[in-house]
Image 1 (tube, one colour):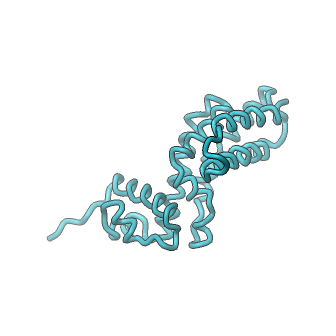
Image 2 (tube, rainbow, N blue to C red):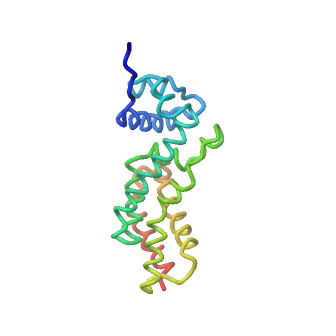
Length: 191
């Protein structure tokens, strides 16, 4: 009798990583499960066994992105808003395909694929907590912390998205622009 094939965590991680890369490069409509399996050096059976199908694989890839992003934010939380802002950019530059997969919107247009709401919102909790702490310490204006956090997120997200899209001249000083923007955000919300 044949032994069942076990698809382990390592196979799962490879599948999630190559899914983001392939979808980023080819677009969700052109990527097949066979393409993903070949790129991950496994079989489509592994995908069906671990995820169920293409929509579930894509959702898992997006959720995994938000999880790892959230981990990087929690690790940077000790640095306050500036530390979180720097960690945001560093994570995005380290995982550009995953970043675009998470925030690009191409998946939602192709399949019913959205991040799991709790996973996505958990990734932003360190920012809301940092805003709340800064408000309690009197460093930020006392407005709704969720609104302040979303406004800050929008600003850093916009700059990172422009950098990843390689907007402007190749010699653009994105690190300098980003640091200027972080300082500007801090001044704009200062108490």
